[in-house]
Length: 191
Image 1: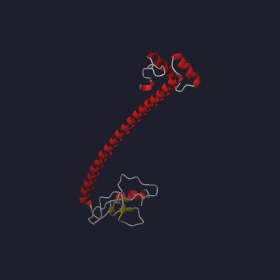
Image 2: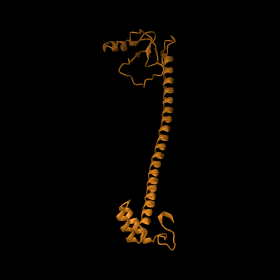
Image 3: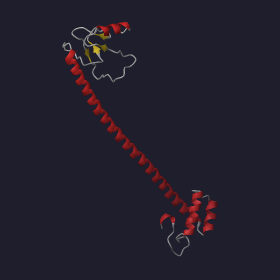
Image 4: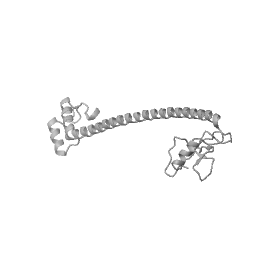
């Protein structure tokens, strides 16, 4: 029979367990998962069973109990896995959404720089759109009134490290820089 129960027959060792016997075995199983020999013999006598029947029933019951625990653990892990997959999908969607916003923002910045460049660019072939970058002036100076070239892969949103220099450029207006800006930078020792 299933679960350690014995099939009916004339031999007392082969008979099916009664509900009372199963209840007594279950009660003992809740108290202790594995029986010592003395306890097994006592329980068998108490329930009218052979000690071997009690031993086999406990062995089968431990196997069922372990299987149930594994199923419960699997269900928990599957739930956690499914939640992690769902969270990952949400994060991937958020990354795509943010990339779209970044692309739109970069396009707007290019548009605004292009519009600003067409109003005051010197037309010397430099990229007047670069706000943070290497300046077209003297290599020893970190400030120039000339045009700027943006470093590849570097945007204003990048964080500068402690050894990085902050290059500042003032676009030329009619061939000369705004003198008040130059004076302000000179006043604070920036040039």
